[in-house]
Image (tube, rainbow, N blue to C red; front, side, top):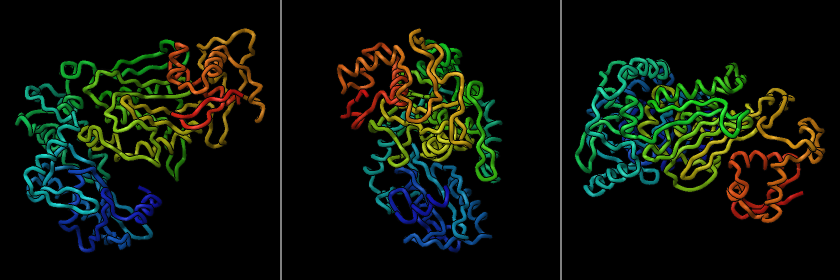
Length: 494
């Protein structure tokens, strides 16, 4: 979290998802009550060293490191927290003062602190003592998160325990120098502490859950439990009707992440960006965020086949989703909603993901450095992320260098049209020729200016993403304009 974001939170004040704690002489018990309530509700952020009114006092600089160690020790203590949970605090400096920030994700479990269950109501932590209220919390967690479904006959030998040594090292390396509890745990304790082993509070069944199977299951076990699970990685730059390269990935999520990252490294141009004094690979940042998103937030009980597709002018992923609403997500309207908090927490522990919502912000930030354009996030029953590509774009110059062609080479151009030029002077874009496919699109729009892109693709028998490509080209040429909203607007041919 940067200083500007923290300053904004100070102005807004405490909310259902933001809590300030003074912590002048150390971490007091009310901090842990807030941790418990955040876990049980929607998650949130705790800032130690800040008064309730947003005044920043800071914590003693020399004590900050010990405070972080004590915090990690307490939340991992089964005598205090049940079930235990692993969090990673960070020490921030703001106007010369030290602040400790803890992001708490929502949990798929119901947690207690010192045998008391807390819930978050507005900006307060409330004790929950009513049996019916506690039962309702369990029901709410059980119904929302399908990753918690218990499989009593999945045994330890059905999991890839050979991956755990590597994962322990990754968790330690991701802990900013702090020793990770996984390092001293047995295999079974590690799985239980990661909430991959649990109890169904409705039936009483105990065992490994769907999250455990997807994260660490052997391939045959995964195919038995989630037979439709697959991630189809495709390269479509030349042969846009089929593919130029393809990987069908059906293995556990840890190795799926690695294989998808390798597919991205193989087919995407690597561009570097100097941020401060750090040299960052924009390709790795973008692929990391979209791959982690499609693996973490997928609905694994659905038969919809997830895709990771690289095209000439865009990368996109799409996967089955439990949608709360149908909307295009931006950093301004972002309301992070966890789909699989157990899987998400596991990925955060090993450094494959950051806190909830950071992926959207990172993609909007770094996509502009990579291609000069913003990504699209479309929330629906099928969740989509579209990241524009432009191999000729250079952030250093803010311009596009000429390339051989920015259209898919599979597209046939009638001989009566010259090859499209991308280097006409500004203001003369309308002189660019129109292809056969673009003419067909304009003909459909002329008959029905209010037609949606989805209906247009169906009418033309064209792939939806291919249609969007041609519409974007028509808009860039000044041949087509969109007026109004996506739902109630209309097209205007110029």
